[in-house]
Length: 345
Image (cartoon, rainbow, N blue to C red; front, side):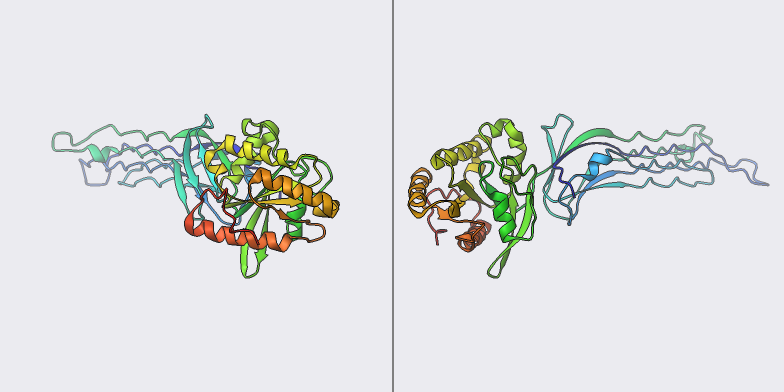
C-alpha cells in the first residue's frame, strides 16, 4: 500500500427537498384543505476516524464526496425522505484544514471520533404547514435549503510511540527492519526512505509502535527535502531515538543539525524525550568508535548508546530504553529530559 499523508478533497452536503403544494381531493368532500407535505433533509458529510488505516492514498483517486439530496414533499401530508449521509473515513492522527491549508477545523486521533464537516440543508415546509383560521387554502410552500460545499485538506500525522530521527542514511530503516517485521527500502544512498514506515516492536513483555521518519536535512523546518511534512509525523511520537551515523566525519555537527531543525519547527518538539545513539558501530574499529562516542557525548550532553543494526550490537539495550521512556512519557507527559540519564542501561 502506498503512503500518502496529505490530500485535498471537495465535499458537499445534500440539498433539502422542496415543500409540496397540494390539496385534499376526495369524492363527496367539496372543500378539501391543504395537504402538501414537507421536504426531507439533505444528507450530512462526516469525517470519521477508523482503525486499520494508516494512509490517505484513497483520496488520490477520489476527491469529490457529495451527500444525497432530500426528497420533495408529496400530497396527502407525506413528507419526503431524508437524504443519506456520506462518511469520509480517515486514519487516526488526521487533521482537517480549511481550503487555505492553515485553519485547523478538526483533529481526529482516536478511532470512532466523528466530525460533521458539512450539514445538509433543511427541507422546505409544504402548504399544509401554513394553513390557519384566516388562510385556509395557502398556495405557497418553502423550497429546500441548499447544502454546504467546501474544499478541505486532510493532513495525516502518524501516531507512533517512538520515532527514529536523524540525517539521511543514518541507518534508521536498517534499524526498523532489524527490530520489527516492517520491510522498508534499504540502500546505501541518502533519501532512500521517501515516506514514513511503521513497525511493531517487542521489548520484553511490552509492544510499541516505532516510526521510521525520512532523513532530515538543514532547512527541513522550512520545507527543504519535504522536511516540514516529515517533522509533522514526529510531533505525535512520545519518544525520539536520534541516530547519528558513526562513519560521518563530524558526528557532533550531525547531531546539532537535526536538533536545530527540531527546535526551529516546534519548541514542543525539541522538548520531547530523546535517546541518542551512535549507529553503524560495526564499521569502525574500537579506538575510532571510542573517539566518536566521546565527541557525540560532548555535543549531546549525555552518554549515547552505541549500536549496530547489522551485527545486533546495542539493539536490545536501545529497545528496552525506548520501552522505559515510553512508559514514563505515558504517565508524566512529554517533559524536557535533556539532562535525564535514567534511560541509560
